[in-house]
Each structure stands twice: as structure tokens, then as C-alpha cells.
Length: 232
Length: 93
Image 1 (tube, rainbow over the protein chains, first blue to last red):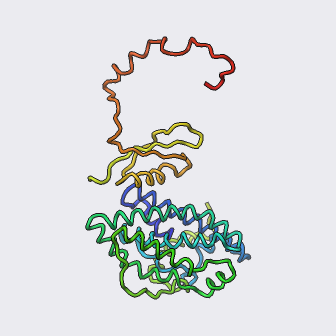
Image 2 (spheres, one colour; image 1 turned 60 degrees about the horizontal axis):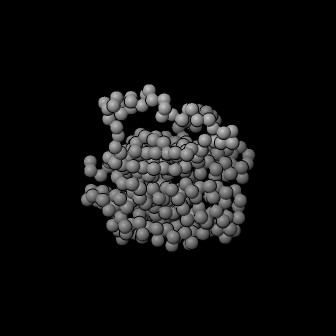
Image 3 (tube, each protein chain N blue to C red; image 1 turned 30 degrees about the vertical axis):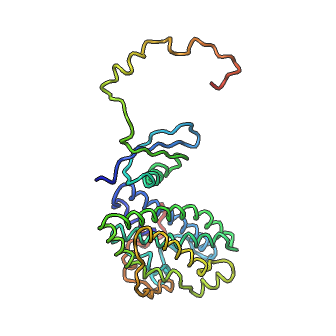
């Protein structure tokens, strides 16, 4: 998600939105760093946050397909952001209560950032949805194209089930109604409809991705792979 | 474009007593102006309070009139409270 947003740096529709979106990108990268540092610590041996970030092969990336959708136009960017934020905030609210202290701490810090992200993306969704004919059209197209990918957010993997049972991870069942309510409220005000299309059955969480990931990783991993262990 | 006016941004810093003008930006409405100001002008902890005012509501003095507006105050020492001795107890005025 952070990577897709960083692609907009310098290309935002206006100076203010350019800075806002890249700010969000940096916020997300900051949160990821905390998680990866913790993961590296748990993994031990030679794991480092950079290795986890940059040196996995595509099958080891476990993100959902939603977050790697391309920056087709601003409507796509903002709808993708909104769907993500509507999920991310309740997720963090759950993780804040995690039995794992490190995760709870990361979540507590990230919640304020996430609250602002949701505020920002909802505001734009409402204004663009209930805006001019063109903006409404583009927004509805974006919603129609992206909504099928949100289904994956709520598919539990074995790991997620286990973590939730042990009080470490979040319970997706609790998040779902909160997420749905947010969508209903905001989209209604934006005069946008949730499409009646079947969900895309995607397996991002199992490491199976679309071909776009190849292009993303080529850019993302280039520096680390060309100059191994490079530091600033 | 009708819907994207310029707004002037004023920020009060953590230790400051007044809002200072820090710049301007485009936004469609007051809420967006505030959020844009937060994004653009408080990234580096510049402040804890934001005011945004649409530029059209600011009336500014005309520099061409500086002569009649400001020069007469130049040689009027009697307007400054310099001849008043403050008692020691009033340290913070």
C-alpha cells in the first residue's frame, strides 16, 4: 500500500493531495517497519527488517490483492484507500488489546494515524461521489472495480485463526460489521452504490498474486538486490 | 475554477501565544482546507492549532499607501511608554 502511494509522489492531482497521500504512504511504512523489526527479532538468526521487506520472493508476500491494485486514477486511489482504512482502523482497535505487548504498542501508536487516514479518505469519497457527473462516474467505476477485492480482507487463514484464538491477533468477525457500517454510511452520503458482483476469489494471503506484483517488486527490490546490504 | 479557492493558513506553535501566517493552499471547502493545512504545514511539528481563512476575506493594506499609513508614527516618541519606570515587582510585562 505504501509502495503504491509512493508511486504518486510528484504526480498527485494537486500539491495538497500529493503531500497528503505521500504522508499516508510514510505513515504506513513507519508502521510496517515496527512490525518487521519485531518479526525479525522473533525470527532471529540473520533476519533483519530490510531482508523481510526487500528480499522475499513473490510467493512470500502475504498481502491481499486490494492493496496492489494500480493507481488508475485518483478515484481508484482514494476508493482503494478508503476500503483499506475502513478495515485497518477496526483491525488496529482489536490489535490494541492483543496479549502480545509489542503488537498492542504498535497498534496503539498506529491508531491515531489510521484515524486520520480514514477521515481523509472518507472526506474525498463523499466529495467526489456526490460531486460532478464526471467525478461520480469515476468513483462508481472505481467502487465497482475494487469492491470485489475487499472480500479477501475477511478470509481467515490458518495462521490468522490461530492468532485470534490465542488472543494475539484480531478477530475478523468482529471487524466485519464495523467495516460494513463505515462503508454503508460513507458510500450512502457519497451517493455511491456497492456493486452486486461476485467477490473475486483471490489468494494473496497464501502468496498467490497477480502479475502486477512482479512489476512492483522489480522496483521495490531493485536497490537491495543490486547493492546487497546497502545502508544510507 | 469556482470550487477551489485559496486559503491563508495560520499556525500557533506549541510554545507560542499567537497564530502566525505560514502560507496558503487550495481547497474546496473549510474542512478540506484545515486537513490540507495539517498535511502541508504541520508535518514537522510546527504547531498545535490551525486557523484557515479564505483569502478573499482578508483585507490587506495597500503598499502604495505605506507613506500615509505608517510614516507619521515615526517621530512621535511621546507615543511610546519609554518614560514610565516599571516597579521591580512587575517583571513580566
